[in-house]
Image (cartoon, rainbow, N blue to C red; front, side):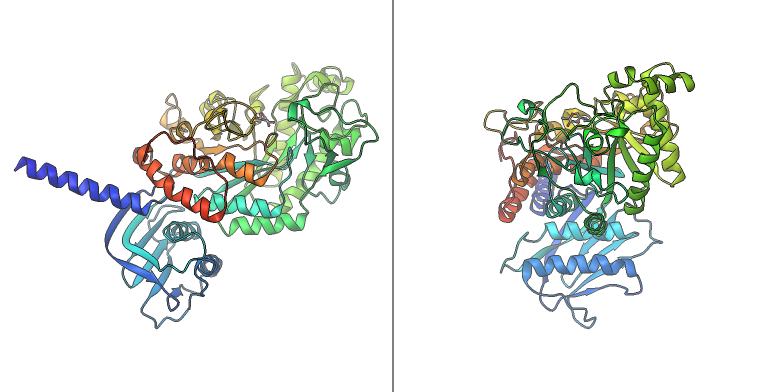
Length: 538
Ligand code: TNX
């Protein structure tokens, strides 16, 4: 008898495991129950929703386009047909924020959610059950019931477009990838020493000058010489405000918020090249070509009030463009030597009764935070903003390990975890043998998968300040789209499971099975990816 029960249990487990594998959604949903039967999406299938709920219109158009793309037919809106895909947005329901219920029966699919995000994610799950590209195959989906919602509210991917520039089309593709894995924050690193990438109407030189550098791209990053006066800057690019507006809409249609990063007070040689008057030395220079330089100004002068006016004017345009609650102000790796040697900075230290350059940096960030708060926005910055005292309401992005994040969370500040290990996707993942040259470091798919954003030492109360996690993609060593794809695929899929799936549902072996389907999807879409780093033989 006991044997019979055990065998039955094993059989049930096998059926469940098999069906999950077949369904193979990434990130793994909270609950999936596969049932008998199938729904077939046909030319006559109707897409139904309450047209008075205008927010559904956008989601419906998105889904209809996706189906058209893979099947070549337009879903009807004819309510009289038998076969229906029904979208139900019910703000009264107790479905979790961004969550959804997907019910597939033989004559109807229903996606039910309490907000638009949930409807979009129900669609994304459904799309993962269908072929990724145009096909003549039947669009057949097994009957099932999925209940699903995210673990974290910040599910981020960052992209550095300064070290190498990627045009609007690539940004859209990146957003599409993120959306397919239910990531919801795109951290757009628009400013760095090597290029200013956002049009600012009041300061046209930021893009006329700051977006272009002398092209030494054929040399390894660290070996690029400093540009000599007279050499023509020919490598670069930037986004116009109109292009940015379109990208923001495109992202919002996929429930992705774009958090722009306007670096300060360091990493701004491109801005100084455009307006030398805002550095301590006030000397003319060009944007950096790459590499590591001494003798080049890459900080704003913290002693000059005109710098704050300049930055507030820039941030006003940024805030007008981006609806994001957060504005990222960088704050990392400030070389404080220029401040040490600068009379105006030293004067500021005296006038404001500051102890040292760390406190001067803190003064800088606090002043900018005050401005952002006056614009109804929140400041987020790299963990160096803790130095010299954290701005009163700042959110900290912890990149030098987790300690900055832990310190901030203990002070009841919000935190996004993005420790170099394992969240830096500019590091190697499988090699380094056989992999394209990378900055160094080694973050395998498994280390990404195993990442737990809530450190053990945080109390439940402090842990609630961890908004989520993010991967950063610095592009010093990543010049092309195909290389970019290689660095993020499939690690983005692993991170998606870290930030979406309940910790107890994570399953490395199951993930390795499910990722095989993603590999086929990448192949069919012609995307580059790394296969060498899964450790489980299938
Ligand atoms: C550190 S992470 C930086 C970036 C580099 C990156 C390379 C951070 C806030 N600053 O400027 O691109 O390392 O991995």
